[in-house]
Amino acid sequence: MMKYAFFPGCVLEGASQEAYTATTKVAQALGIELVEIPGWTCCGGSHLQDYDKTAALAVNARNIALAEKMGLPVLTVCNTCTLMLREAKHELDNGAKELVNPALQQAGLEYTGTSPVAHFLWMLIKDYGLDKLKKKVKKPLKGMKVAGYYGCHILRPPHIMGFEDHANPHSLEDLIRALGAEPVPFDARLKCCGFHSVFTSKEDTMKATGTINLSALEGGADCTVTPCPLCQMQLDMYQPEGKRAVNAKDDIPALHLTQLIGLALGYTAEELGMKRHIVNTGILLAGR
Amino acid sequence: MRKITFKIHRFDGQKSWIQEYTLDHQPGKTILWALIQIKETLDPSLNFTASCRHAICGACAVRVNGQATLACETPLDKMLKRWESDTLILEPLQNFKLIRDLVVDWEPKAERLAELKPWLMPKDEFNKESGCRQSPEDFKKINKNSDCILCGCCASECNKLSGNNSDFLEPFVFAKAQRFVADSRDKNPVERLSAAINHGAWKCQHCQECVAKCPKGLSPAEDISNLRQEAIAKGLVEHSGVRHAKAFLDDIKKTGRLNEGMMAVKTDGLVKSIGNIPFALRLMSKGKLNPAHMFPKPIKEVAEVRAIILAVKESEKARNIAIAKRSEAHTNPDVQRPKEAAK
Ligand code: SF4
Ligand code: SF4
Ligand code: SF4
Ligand code: SF4
Ligand code: FES
Image 1 (cartoon, each protein chain N blue to C red):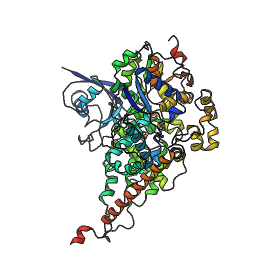
Image 2 (spheres, rainbow over the protein chains, first blue to last red):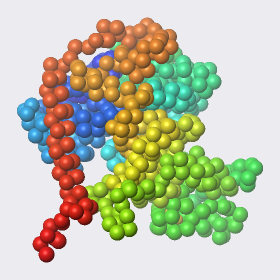
Image 3 (cartoon, each protein chain N blue to C red):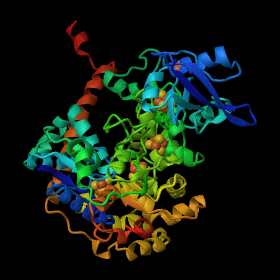
Image 4 (spheres, chains in turn brown, red):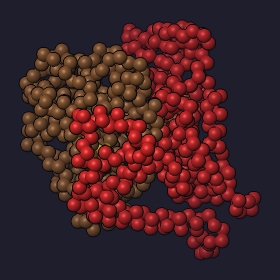
């Protein structure tokens, strides 16, 4: 049985609880054991380092060291968590280990570098395998047109992420296909949703959000799907503002990656927490 | 014979169109080779710029299938493989004023670059006799950023710049600013820091495109992060960006986890957040903003987390002092260097 040290991230405990539910359900159905890292802390959300880079290094070294103590690889479900943890790992492996370990040792921890950090999407492709996933699909998402929206931090910066070609990735499209749905190309596939500047640059952010949703609609998509709960929040919660910013008329549901998988595995929309979305997912599911 | 089609963006000063050119495939060539081949054999009216052909002058940046890159160092075969196609789209850089075809205007960019005073303002202690020395450690801090060749790739794909360039500068401008802020010989970091903040350093979207696109391995996004930290260290703290970033640290120290519910209040202040009430109600109606979560229980290891942050900061401070001592020995003519002392 595949087993991981699960790093859920703050957002899955708060606004995106539906993603927590969906992740747990999907893992269960696929026979993947997720052991939540006891005492994990917030990764700093790609902001902490702007205030105190050393603190960001320290907390994420601790997060990884906790997983090492469990003897398990780290599994994340948020792009930005993945980046923050991998960035810390990169620094630790390049000289920061000596700086951090004396502090960790006081808490009975040590960073040695034994636990890799991977996103759920990568794990499904690399460890689990899409062929195996295909066999588990109970309700193929036939006819569903899906805009796979990556979000920045699962791809960039490439020297930290490096799972696939950042300029033309295809993991998300491969997964969408494996679920029986059809991935649609759209212009804003690799653009930034603006989540991290929602407070400091609100207008640009809403324009970015609106542009992505509109681009997905123009590509003929029934919904967007994203591996990042922060992107999902941005595309869903701020959709009304986004629409206004680009004068768009139509709504488009935004799904968490694990919700899309969950649907194909036979869970109902209700079980996957889709009632919690701002944009109604009903249209998408009509007749399913 | 395998044929490669190039769809090239043309612009004659008034109208723009897409023109198709087809070349016989040759292995081991670059995008710049294709452009030169087209100009020499098919269409002398095609305009583009290039000079060194060695990724040094920065003149040849174009977009290949929507991604900025140096034409002279980008292998054609790599692009054909990346896009699994024998047709490529070549366009001028985004976020630049267009002159002709693939040629963009650098004139306005030079003016924007000057906003952050990208030249050395030497400290007063330097003079003709003692020179303007710098230790190897201090040089390391500016070495990477000195490699910028002003190609514009970062600016082309910058998500913030594409959104609005009136309150933000090109990523390479911030990289330049950081290069001088970090220069041990420069006397005016604060002036540059406040200029960087006033020109939108807190508005960067963290999209990391600039890092992904830089052919010289610079990390403008990281430079912006460093500028932010430096600005805070110099007391430039009156900004929603500072309050937002600080909230993460405060929450981690307090409970270990982020308190999203209070984020708007902490970042924008109570009064401004009230403008967000319709948004908050929208979230509450779906259970996305749970008042019960407004005051989360701390994780039980929170004291340990605080102690670790503190201890790492202490050992970093000690390391920095050691480095500073070493570089002082190197730059201060009054401190004898070991080699000379041995004489
Ligand atoms: S990225 Fe956000 S959700 Fe993920 S742990 Fe960090 S702060 Fe929490
Ligand atoms: S803004 Fe959105 S797309 Fe860009 S890094 Fe953040 S979550 Fe990802
Ligand atoms: S990280 Fe910031 S500066 Fe770099 S491309 Fe994105 S928005 Fe622009
Ligand atoms: S920072 Fe890199 S991408 Fe940007 S102009 Fe300089 S060399 Fe080019
Ligand atoms: S021609 Fe000089 S950098 Fe490409």
